[in-house]
Length: 198
Image 1: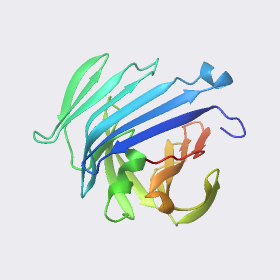
Image 2: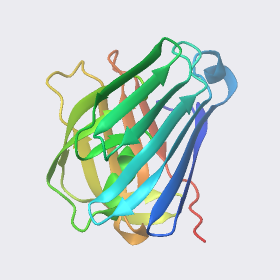
Image 3: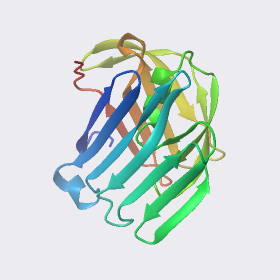
Image 4: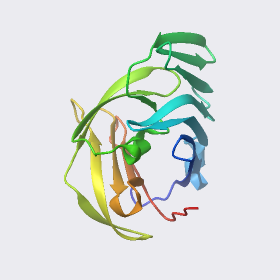
């Protein structure tokens, strides 16, 4: 966040090209732990030619909003959201994903799209986002100089929450940089430090 290191993130993706499990942790450190929660998101589901197909998502650690989860029933085309306030069922739209898998959705697609309309859930709601592919770039990271595909959320106003991510061509389009800008203009940026594959 600016020059201040406020924490670290650890993502663990396991898959067998038929199914996947993704664990994403945000761990604040130092003074940041006073205003940031330690969040853990988990997603699991299937992998198809169209990409990742989530079946279950959960988020825990959010002290203000509480635990949330989402169950994807693709046969009935229903999405069931569970929060501390109760449960609700919504129509499940094709190409829906969750907050954990968003930067990974493109890694399993046959071709990178120039524009995408994606419904994303955080376990509390299902929201439509528009993403567009920007010019490819080269970035310097702790694991070397990487050629990346750059995707950015389409927003109506500069005061809207913004989100963008960079996917490494050398690493099967895994996310290697993520940037989030809140409504107040605070920028939180995360860049890969280590990448281990098995």
